[in-house]
Amino acid sequence: MIGNTSAFFKAKHVRAFACVRYTVLMRTVNRKPGRTQDPALTDRLLTLALNRIAHAGLERLNLDRLAREAGTSKQAIYRRYASKSDLGRAAVEAALNALAIPAPDRSNAARDVFRLLTAYRQTVFLAPIGRAALHLSLDPAGGAAKHRIDQDLAFRLRQILIATPFERHMDTRIRLFTSSLWQETVDRMTKPAQPGADLEDDLDADLEDVIHLVLGLGPKLA
Image (cartoon, rainbow, N blue to C red; front, side, top):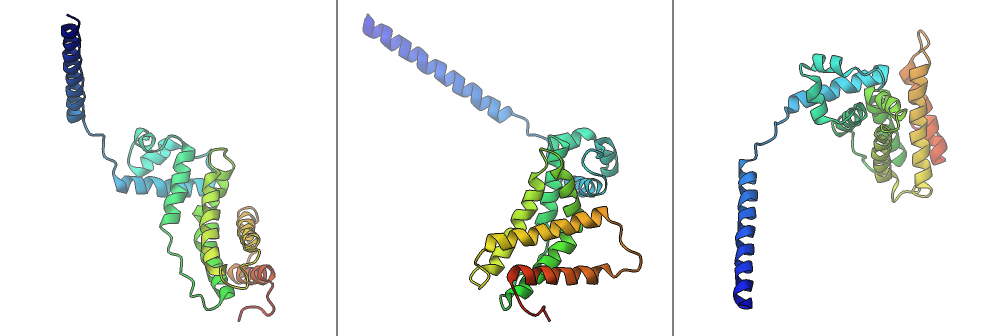
């Protein structure tokens, strides 16, 4: 009797397991696919958000207005990003990923650093990416955007400085270069340009001074 009872419960257990497995499989087969996201719409949202945050800051970013300008709804934004901070970080990340930064030629480390910092100054730090990242850094959840820029620049600087006479104290040199560019960004955001001043030439000269000071060089770059 005990043996028959054991066999009965075992058979019942197998049938129950098969029923559950069948139900799960049917739910998986019948599950409706989620709504696909339009990449073109995502790009529009990220570009608009980046420029809005760069111009006026995260707090003044109006998602209803952003949705209208992008030709979508506020709900479409929240399907992609949980908060304005998430949207801002994604906008900075997308802009960084789209950058075309020249590779170092490895013939002259100082010249490679100058070219790299000039490219970053023009396309990141003094562009909407850098200004948006600074605004985002004021938000507790948005500081990762600025850190992402720092990491990206540090990686490229290491590629230039490694295996050169400037490899010693490399991390300190990288921090000094990065701080100099961020300070330049803050100055441009807070101080109006002087009328008639050739700002780009002045910035190039200042950047050369920074490079020579940080690398401990003698004569300036030719």
